[in-house]
Amino acid sequence: MRLVMAAELPGDPETAMALQERLRGLVDPANPGTTEFRTVAGLDSAYDDDGNVVAAVVVLDAATLEPIDTATARGNTTFPYTPGLLAFRELPTTLAALEKLGATPDLLVCDGQGLAHPRRFGLACHLGLLTGVPTMGVAKTVWGEYSEPGPRRADSSDIVLDGEVVGRAVRTQDGIKPVYVSVGHRIDLDTACAWALALAPKYRQPETTRQADHLCRTLLRDRL
Image (cartoon, rainbow, N blue to C red; front, side, top):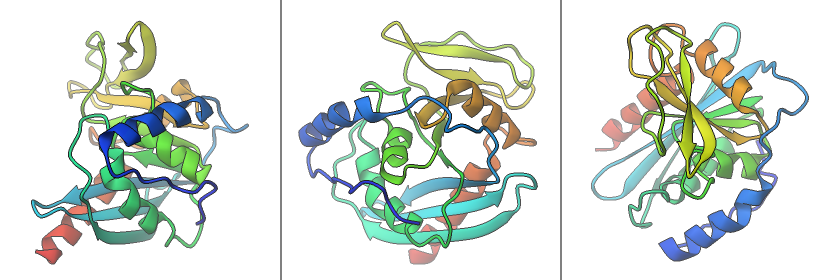
């Protein structure tokens, strides 16, 4: 697949934050005319203590959740670990992996934040703009405040940051800690939450994330 926007990759936190502020107004929190996606891709990255990074993309058939394509990339990051700027550690290898895919997925699911971010521009927003593909974030941790949702699958509650609803805590399995869903680009929050549930029929995390994470860990282990 090809990018629709050239990637700017700052080398320092100040420039990276300025870029997030500049790009966030381009995010489109609305659906692209359909909420039906035939192929869904999960993206994940993993690191070691030396700055080596691996990225994996796993494309699933949305109906069966079976993998139909994968792509990986390896690299090294020197960008400092800074909360709110983790996208800049992951973008180079993630983009390299995406560009190896034979076809463009209909939906990208990031293991990270979209609008639920201090500057409303997490990894899912950034990747959505660069690819032009509907993109959502499903994170394991949360920025903002929320009330604990009910105990049953599909129970949810809004995530609020600085008085603004930026995402939703969604219970994907009965009695299990929720995941934190937010819009990345070209999708609305209701649709993103519906897909988070559809992609997580058995476990807390969506199958997209689970399979991309497994591939990442395998790649990193093989590199050591």
